Length: 317
Image (cartoon, rainbow, N blue to C red; front, side):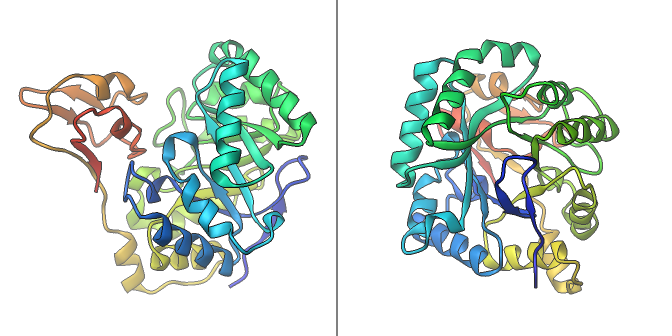
């Protein structure tokens, strides 16, 4: 199997067209231990995937640090981000990432879950920190992740932002303020400006598992999408994704394995504190009679709500 390699916009950063998202390995989802997670990351490298996506929220810096031991740092590309909005806060998050990853630089570092042009303006000091960090050689590119068309369009006009990480799948699942066509247009505009684009959630947080080959190839068919991040939690799952991305056929047995549906589990001991409801950017949670309830049609299984549950009663299973 041979995965394509491409440049991430005009950043000078070359990446595999498949990027492994580490959210699924961390405590918000499968909670794979550091050693097992590192083995999975090394397996990805052996299969030609050398681009990895993480975030301060995910709790997977240790997985990547362990996986990188004994291999040249320049042989992998790492993207991370945080919620910091002040200069000092961004600097602390960056220094934490550098320390916990055990590296002198991070390829792409930036802002997590930006919602609008207004929130981007509110993060001006954090963006300035990223620009200074790039001058110091601590990062190679400044990035932004988002579930909105508006932010991708804003990035097409912002030379401060080198890389955008938008949600993008064939049904538009998880796009907060638009549809698939509008997001595709925004991505194309950002790419024309020279921004690197690597998309997220090609399977719509699990909704498209039953049509994984078509969904993955649909995203990769867009030339403006330079790479596509997909979460994995096993070597078998990774091998299937690599095969699909490489244009190879996969067996019906493997497809049935990939089609195993995930869902958000809310345990019966939920205290109805409402923290998860307030945290959900997709409006997928509400307080029911006995516990918080999820609208499966709106949930993209990001697992971010797990971090806000003080009683540990929410899981992606």
